[in-house]
Length: 306
Image (tube, rainbow, N blue to C red; front, top):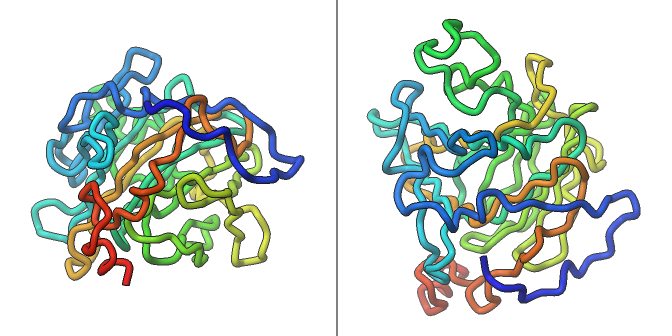
């Protein structure tokens, strides 16, 4: 990753927040090959970090969840999640990212640096299932085994459910009561930083969000104005964060194609923190306004901003 350009967060943290040690997942994808992310990475157990599945039937993907070089920094690779309208051929893509040795069993933090080029329906969830799908019951002989991803669309086994978007309100589940919405000013085409603090024992999480390099802001739960959001955990058996599960696509056709880019994922498996991983540096300030993602800031970006 890039050399350190910042001395840390410019934020006064609550004494209740521990200063943990964030671990960057798989070198921030920089050691991946360009193209499909399917079967790339190493989760620490000798198992591929990623598995991608289309329409609950086709394992593997070469089109919609791919490794790309950033326009503003070609040496820096990222995972692009392509959100499509319904076409009748591909409905939803399910990408499972195994945390492996970085799994969270009690308290911990998930950090994402991402940008979205508009409102979309890309959703990230967490679960405690095995990293890859028990495809056709070949591994266990039991399609309902909770030790594998079972079917691709397994929302009942989720803990965190959050939309990765921009140009619209922040959205996350609040238990089985459904989604809640907060205006956090998430700008289209801007790099965002998101911390998800997980309290697994109490089935709850809290969020901190900011534009790249700025001060993390608590995302309040609009239900009560408090800090905590309830996990989905519909079947009440989620006792760890072992995977990040991305649901991509299936949005209304009139929304058109939208993209979410994951530049970094980092985990602290033991502490709640709004710290960065070692070696973190913000995206260069002059490129944060690159709203069309073409690697420069020009009149086209101004038109999008206007």
